[in-house]
Image (cartoon, rainbow, N blue to C red; front, side, top):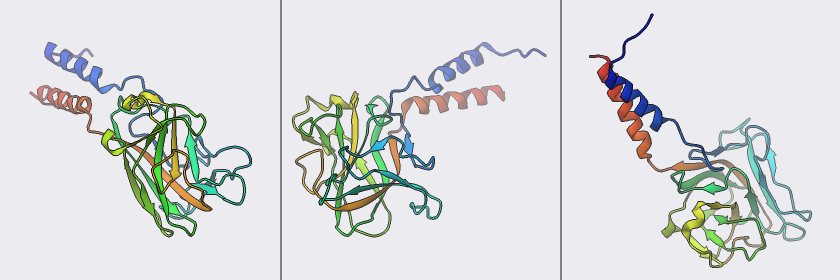
Amino acid sequence: MSITMRPELRILILFASLICVPPVQSSIVAGQLDDFQDGTTQNWMHGGGGAPAVVNVGTGGPAGAGDSFLRATSNTSGPGPRLTTFNLAQWTGDYIGQGITTIEMDLENLGFSTLSVRLAFRPFNGPSSTPGYLSSAFTLAPGQWQHATFSIAMNDLISIGGPSDYGIFFGNVGELRIINEAGASNLTGDLVTAQLGIDNIHAVPEPNIGALLCLAGLSLILRRSRR
């Protein structure tokens, strides 16, 4: 059975199909979520040289029993004295093009000292002198899981080492780090003996005008099809 469609409806459907289908994405995508339920570290790592490994813990996350999370460890009496974990895979690329304005996550301080958790962004994984940007700190006392929000707006970030400009977030983020740093002087973190639980790392997008147009177009199609 053939269906006759009015010309204006064909145009509206074509319009909706063009703006509702997402473009080819960079490594980072709006809505990216690392919840560690697959049993892996989801490409989050610690430094080499015998540093304590970043591990997936199968239970005890913010949702309780059966909720996996990532545990990072540092030890000032041996290799790996900085509480730092980094990602060179799905958290690289074009944050601004994807409309990402904040990164949220759940954190638990599993040690005994209060932590100052920050995000660090660098154009590539290199020596400690590699320039980049540092987020504001989230103060994390020992105890229960807490929800942290980190803004990546230009005015909320601290330039470290003289990066060329904020353009790093337009496709040039090569490394995202989660670190503990009380001050704002480096991208590697403070010396500390500690353990940090991390879960539900989420790239939060700003309201997308394309998505709003998509919804408006689909709504118009539905209204016209009912006439």
